Image (cartoon, rainbow, N blue to C red):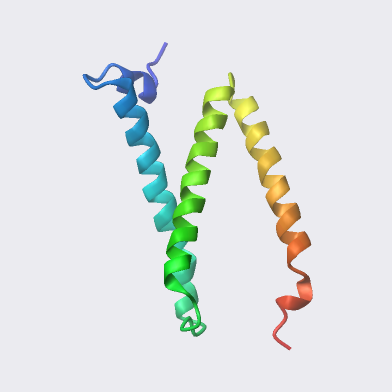
Length: 111
């Protein structure tokens, strides 16, 4: 059987706690960078001078932390890939529902 990448990481000469913390911090940093990508693209099209940047940075980091920890929870609780996908889809569908419920289509229209 082929060794998986996480199994190979467990063989590294570092403690499991450091390994898990490093994986979580990597996911948080990646999520934070991905959270600012839409803002960079939006800066080309609209004026962002009305945004409170301090609150925006805090919110993006908190969302990244929450997403990373939720991903870790799903990864630890699932025994198979199908279970992890099912848990992940269940959470995604809830997010889609609440976003659609919160923002009406007419708020996106320019006219």
